Length: 266
Image (cartoon, rainbow, N blue to C red; front, side, top):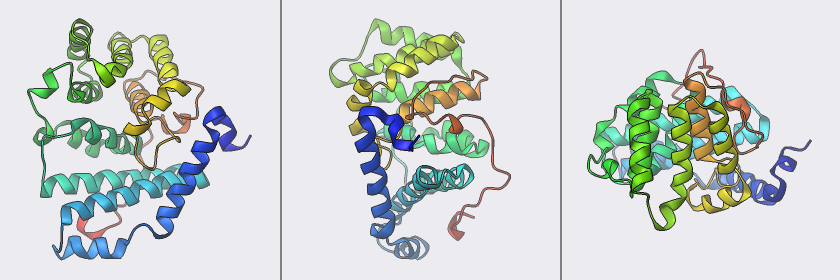
C-alpha cells in the first residue's frame, strides 16, 4: 500500500507536507551561511543554530518519509536536538516550555541517552511557578519530563491536580493528555493505547495542527510519538494502528555511532 493511503482523509495534507519539506531542503536553507555565522559569531548565532536545527529536522523527516531510512533519520534528529542544546548554551530562557518539549521528541526518537538526560535536567528552561499551574501549557510539558524520568508518583499526583482544576479554553484539549499520563502512571497499557488512538483521530489531529512543526504537520502526531516513545522507554510496548505514530520509531535502539555533522558540535 502506498505510504499516504494509510492517512485516509489526511492523505492530501500528508503528501503536501512532504512536498513542502522537500521544497525547503531544495532551497529554503543557506546551510553554509548559517554555519559561517555560528562559527564566526556573526549576526545572531542563536537564531542561526535554531534555523540549522530546523534544517536537520527536515532532513530527518525526509529521510524517513522519502526513503524509510531509520538510521539516517535518527542521526538527523540527534543533530537537530544537539543544535537546540547549543542554542541553550548560548542563550536560554524560561518561556514557551511546551514548544521546547515538543522539539525534544527528536532526542527521544534518536534514542541518544545522554541527550535525553541533558534535556530532562536542563533547569535553565523551567519556570517553577508555571509548571505548577494546571492551566498552563508548561504544566503539561513538565509532565512529559517527569514521565521520561519515570517519576510516576509525581505524575499521578499532578494528574489529579489537573482533574481538580482543569484548564479552560483551547487548553482543554490537554485533558486527553492527562488521561494518557494517568494510564502510564498505573501501567495500564490498554488505557494508554486507547488514549493514543483518540489522540491520533482525524478530529484530534486537526485540533493540534497549529502546535505541530512546519515539517511534521499532517505527517505525525508529535504528542503521540512522544507519549508512545515514553511508554516504550519504560517497557510498555504500546501499539496503535495509525500512520501518525510510526511503529518503527518506537523500539529503543540507539545508533552504534552518532555523528554531530558540524564541527562546532563536536
